Length: 397
Ligand SMILES: Cc1ncc(COP(=O)(O)O)c(C=O)c1O
Image 1 (spheres, helix red, strand yellow):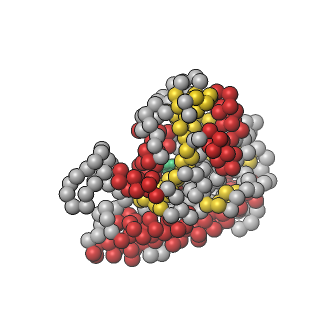
Image 2 (spheres, protein in one colour):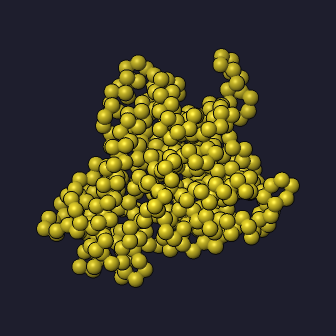
Image 3 (cartoon, helix red, strand yellow):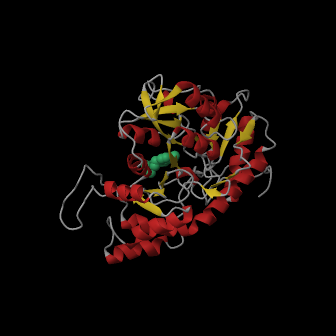
């Protein structure tokens, strides 16, 4: 399928979902093996294999599977030593889970803006914040406004495109900040040739239903730090300190991924590169099609990035009369499922009191962006229906 699509085929009326899992390959065989052998719970060979293959894929020596991505973030923050009342810098334009995980640790998010080009955390404004709003004292960096210590940066690679990590890592080194990547939406993407998730000190993934690979629910922590990996495993296993006796040396969590779901994860991981290739194909078809539609821009790709095009998203310019909400509702009426970007986190009731620094772009992107159907299983004629529908709504026809 190429370019603008001819409008001869009417809407079939069947729902085109936003992004659904692709369950194929060895999924049934591996899950059946768990069911047949009774290895369904929190230990088993598939858990070990999923951890090993994820570590190999991302390029870190250690991986620890978790019950979901939010739990992975919570534990990664704890393993990295985040303390109550400290602060972690995060983009305001992301899913809420990483900000919540910061709060689970008793720490506070400080919200940064998204960059205008690639919609990731803006390193320029972050630099400005660190230089102008913080001061070095007692061997650490302190936020002048809140008088809290800044501990970490949590770059979330959103929508399949990596953050610009070089300036982030430079700032982290300069100010002795930990870098905790949320690479959930970027499994398989590369930044200057290096895998997302292997760039910072520790990284997290989620495998919920709409991610590039899914275990239904599940997560993973990856790191090069042996001590942090072992602490992550300990904390996710109720902090059990003896292999036999029920001895626990601190308050832990029941955050382990079960073997049954890890089996699905192993099968999905075998197909990851095929899934990525299909996502890129879908995105390129949309890009070619919308090149002819004034008022609609597609998410850009940096020359330093190999995006996986996980969630294809367009930006509707403010001068387009229909607006993002009408576009969304009109597509819904045509049985085409879409979704808006996340409401910027500094606007949510539990975070309105938190500090946000020079946020402008994130609000604009929230107003204008819409994600379009991009399941790996999306058929060419379905994509044609989406493209044609967007053209006719945006053109007011
Ligand atoms: C960037 C990001 N981080 C974290 C999560 C949370 O993962 P989970 O739903 O597995 O807890 C998600 C999505 O769900 C996400 O998109």
